[in-house]
Length: 79
Image 1: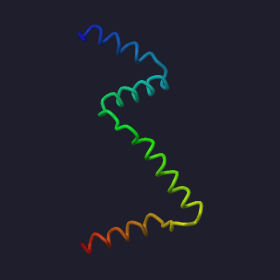
Image 2: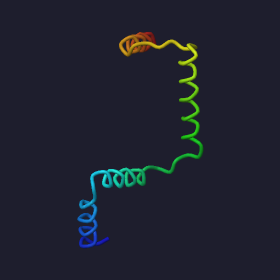
Image 3: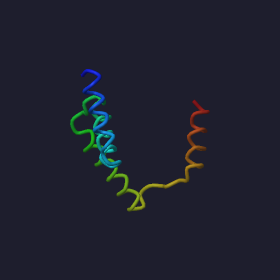
């Protein structure tokens, strides 16, 4: 694309509402990412649902962030 059409496009995009520009920016950034692997998003949705289910059922221990960091540091020190 030459400079003139690109500048015209920029002007048109900047005339959009903030929400429209944000939506367009999101789409443009996603277009730069590598193609998504089939099923990855579904797998993450299932994993998130599984973890939430464990929390709701009281099957997992929730810890504060500070405690989590403390535990991770201790593990790393013992490597």
